[in-house]
Image 1: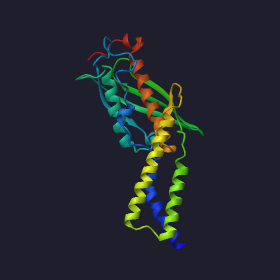
Image 2: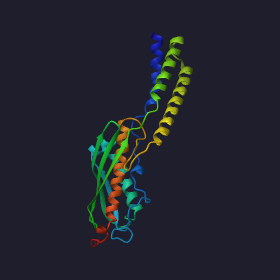
Image 3: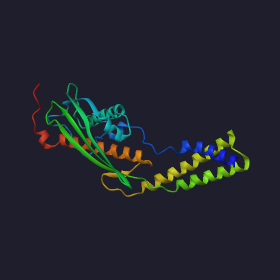
Image 4: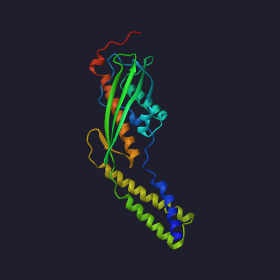
Length: 249
């Protein structure tokens, strides 16, 4: 029995690295950025064309916690995304008036099959039409599993039987077991991705890229903020803003 326990314990240690996939992915500014290909009005011909300079972006510690990130990391990604987004639509220019972006609110709602997020951003400064706010909402659907748990249990059982027959695995056996486990989990992950890629989703929702609450919260929050930035850009390019006269000086 002690040999069986030793074998199972050794395999569980090997499996831990392969199974640790439920956490949130690294925070990426690209995922928050509004592409210039999106259907939002551009600044050209309006009072804000090339008239702004982004001085910074910020979010509170509570908002950063919703992302599963620390505030400095979120602020950096948010500033990069805001700068790229504003530049994509023609608002930034050399010598422009300094403006700041604040991720002023982020609300997460967790349900059995999804995580919903509502975000609000605010652009402020001494320029025409400011301050202006943008809002976005997104639902991150929890991914469907395709039997990875059963395969993992089979692998554990096989290794446990091996350990019971011949003692705890040595270095060579551990390496072989780890390769086999990684292959099985890789196959399961590929099947999961294929299964979830075929799911039908509606407007303002998508399937989370990984299992677990952290991954779903990050996915929902990221897309809600990007949609809020897109909404803000739409308001900057709307007729009320375009008809305003830029402040003198």
